[in-house]
Length: 536
Ligand SMILES: *[C@@H]1O[C@H](CO)[C@@H](O)[C@H](O)[C@H]1NC(C)=O
Ligand SMILES: *[C@@H]1O[C@H](CO)[C@@H](O)[C@H](O)[C@H]1NC(C)=O
Ligand SMILES: *[C@@H]1O[C@H](CO)[C@@H](O)[C@H](O)[C@H]1NC(C)=O
Image (cartoon, rainbow, N blue to C red; front, side, top):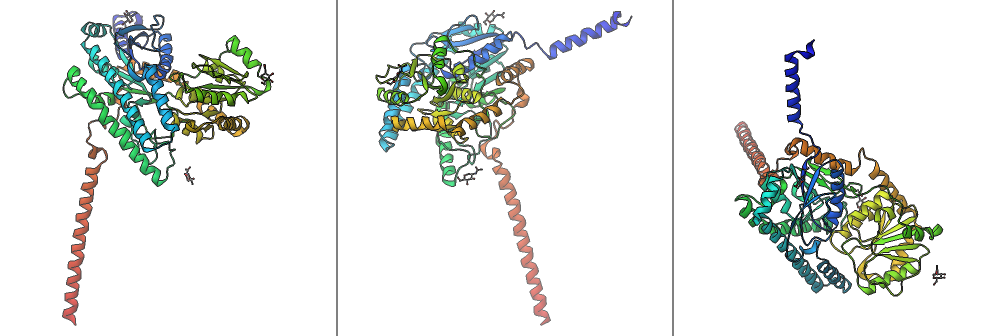
């Protein structure tokens, strides 16, 4: 009997051993997560739920001042750093509210030079304070030897981080672990700019408010945007972290190179929404990761929606970061809503406007995905945050945009250019404009049809973005990294990256050959003339 013989037993053992060594089980790995608070976290938590359901043991590094990142022992284990004060813009509601009010006030006063200077000052102050706190967090983390020892001994197989702040990137390097980034933004702009070619001729810089189709002047302005926000931004922000890299990770390290060396990028982008652009093999697109079929509404909302009859429901939310807008703006909005035949669900945590109509329900929290997925929902009034936009795309609900800050205007430009949204200028908004805008989105079928088309395109994928993200995290776990997907442009000097040295060399060869040819022609011409002169 062959199968009982020692040789076959031995070879079976060998094969098993090789198989086990080659593909360590992806299930039940220890994963260290270094998230960023706010809407970034709400999105990442969805992936953590999936990884948890697949049997992985998840640990989250958070600060004691976290706003949304709570202790959730049923989902993940926490390493909590105690920190004095809030970690800047993502946690500090007051700072954000003040920033928003200042920005709106400046916008409402008209776009003058003083307003521009003041706005720049506010943004600089906010960025400075936020990065200052982040550096303090990193310093405390690396100087906490007891915690570092715990992290080192915990047997992590992977670091999953949002690289908007670099603590996770630095930690992965220190612990020598594979690194997966869950991202759309770095602190100076679109994460693509760090790893993929981004020609300014057809990749509009966020902040420019352009589409991919730009005139000459727009391309000029886009290039200026690229230089001032992406290049100057990284040149201003990176050095302060490089100093921490030198101190804790050794000389010769810098935050840009460390980030570029991430094994994989889970990019919160879908090209139904973003304009198509060049990319690289270690970027996996997971835009819309949080979208899922709607669940039934809670009883109070269900009853309210049922009362809307044939007119349906309008849903308004300005996102998780914005809890309060100026009182007069809230009253403007309430006035417009009161004149609609639809019923309005308005997620708002500020004071109740005095003129709120009886067709409007103010709620402090709302199950956004379920409301957008309800067949009675006719329109979504949104600030243009990407989480809400992807949910609107997924469920095919047309959008009326009221962009406030950051990337929101640009996000709405992307929907606008596909005919799926109408964007209003908040700085000059009055109730008549809002009402007209709403009536247009509600009555023109083109908005709903454009959204339905985007929705059909977005849903037509071999796997959901969530399954894709989880697959690729496990892929990196199975293979201990994904370095083979990483393009080799790191460390190339800029002239080599753009092949300027090659162009110069080729140019010189062409110039020399042309020179030689001209010389030869001249000689030949003279020789011919001499022959002619002799003959005559
Ligand atoms: C999960 O991770 C935590 C934190 O690192 C650790 O204390 C715990 O023992 C781990 N559990 C398993 C089953 O590995
Ligand atoms: C780009 O914009 C110009 C002018 O607005 C228009 O004529 C042209 O068709 C557009 N091109 C594309 C590809 O959309
Ligand atoms: C809401 O207000 C309008 C006009 O003020 C009134 O006609 C209507 O009956 C009210 N509806 C309810 C349900 O109270």
